[in-house]
Length: 268
Image (cartoon, rainbow, N blue to C red; front, side):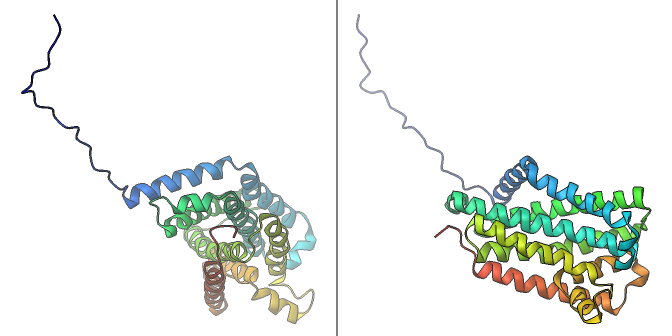
């Protein structure tokens, strides 16, 4: 007996649920998870973040020659400056340039993620890496070199590290905006990276004369080292430290402005 469909049967139409755009918090969380995963899997970035500053830390305290560069807090501040410059220029700027060449940014821009959230997520990850580096350096300086800080000094130092990271990440953003090729940026970044750290080393030394000392002190690296030195010894915070804070802020605005103005999301 063949089955016959009932003529009066009512067919229920398929109901399609409306698509819901992801909330901004969901988008930002997904970006953060992806960027943190990439950062943790980048062995080179991790090496630059922790190994290089520790090597320089022990080197600056190993020889009596480096005593002429300044007090122990200043030398630790120089190491922190090196770590921040490494993460921002050799890490962040290079990652941005490589992802741009691979078309990562162009693919992200067609997603619901706002453009500001894409870059903010990456910057948050870099600041977290800088804070982790600073913690490792400060603990190593305390355990092995006897450079101990008070609780107030630790808190003030970490606040100044966050503030100073804006300067170096601004430099990295400016380089990524002005130089589109990853290979060219690799070469330019290494050239720019050394003066940022090496010039600031002589911010408290007159080995090469007072003029050179003045230039070194108010260079980007020198202002950060002055700021961090004052943070590690709050009782020595003076007008020069406040001026270093203001100059660092000015550097941050200038470099970030250049990076935002000339940044390209694609290679063309």
